[in-house]
Amino acid sequence: MPGDPVYIRPDGMGDWDFLDFVRSAVFRNPERETKRNYGTDYRPLLSLLSSRGLSWRDATPQALADYRHWRCKAPENPGRIGGTKWNREAAAFTKLFT
Image 1 (cartoon, rainbow, N blue to C red):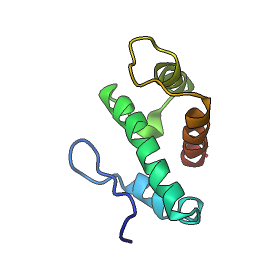
Image 2: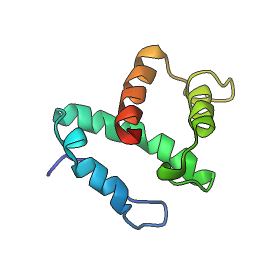
Image 3: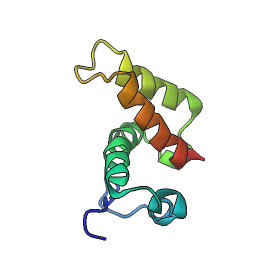
């Protein structure tokens, strides 16, 4: 649908499991703005996992904890986020990983 996020792996290929997720009722039912926000929330996580040679399906609890630390607290991250933004990202990730 126009305005819906498009997801392409770093190698330029589609991730069919992830595309199945974004076409599922879990992702399809929220409002368009929520889907757009979640789409922007997924990108940095998926990029970080990919840089570590991991697919989102292979993300470990430790990798996710590391991501949260980097996103919210790491002094070397100039784009740290606060609790409200993290809560939205966490909601997006919960949908993905459940």
